[in-house]
Length: 484
Image 1 (cartoon, rainbow, N blue to C red):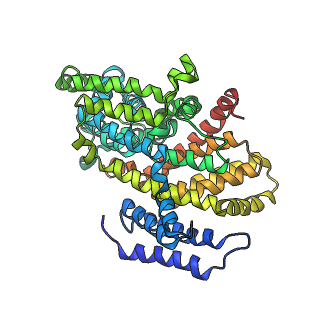
Image 2: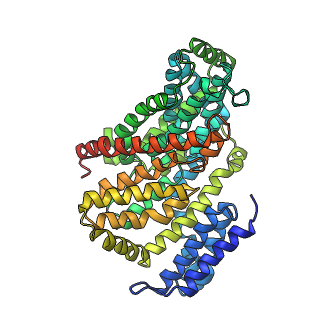
């Protein structure tokens, strides 16, 4: 993707209008307003795909450094522009993407998928659950939800569908391919919601929550995983069943699928040494969940990012990954770059008081409705979630809206931890909605198993189901955990 002049011109025009034509509102510092102009322009460019997101990140860093909106002295402005590259959360995601390359390289991901199908694949519904739980198993160490759903699980799904002659090119996708493709896709938002490291924008949520609460709430890997465990398992248990009733496959019994999976496992042969090492690294990554601290006490706590580096170094020392593999993992380096730029801009919008002003404006507007904190937080969460119909990037959406909506919710009386978890869930549930909602969407939709109407119908229904699950089951679970 190169430079696109029309989206770039639109983004530039938006930024210039905010900077020069719209008066700075009362209570907002000029520097904050000018940073907002640049921020909105960058987000508009990301949405319009004016340039690759990494290139736009470089532009953002340059603009903050040159304009001096964060500091008068040029050297301080440059330090501010680069400040987020020191964030452990950013490197947690970057290193995790590097580690996930080992799952693809060793074939461990495919082995896990076929293993599930060999056991549960005697019915189409069972294959659906096999795909869903295969994705869940590898989610904690695959921060690229696109690589997970589109690069690992989708080829397995297509192979199973093809073995039953369910092919869009032959017009036979309704046999089972349509159903399996939808399960393949809708597993992705749920598993992404369950772990900080299951999709790249989740640490951005962590950062925005910390900023809004003055670091009083800092969601750790273990806290997030435990909080999302019960609602996530409930959602992933319901999802294949709901889709089965909406789009029932023509072929419901699949005795040959289990045999097909066993044949594929036979082709893979015995588990290789590299796969065994990869499994061992999985065990090491349990440190992310704070297991040593839970068993032996806080003295044995290990930082999540340090654990990720331990895992990567083990893969390098054992030869499972080479440094060339790491260098070729462009997604990791790209993510570190754009993530650092967006976190930097969002951080300084908060420091300069813009987020507080905007959330106060939202708060004033909603408070007049007399909804109480429950109604107000529900309105904010749903408006935030369904606004994703207008976004083609979860990162752009979260960066643009999360901070202000979250701050408004807690100002209106929502328990901060409860609302943080609800908004974190919504930040992933919103992926269900469209065929452009996240990187996985065009991969699976582009395979042709569903029509656009079918995709959007399934997306809306699953968004409602997931909201109900996370609000009701999540709310009860979080109450039991003492989060509100």
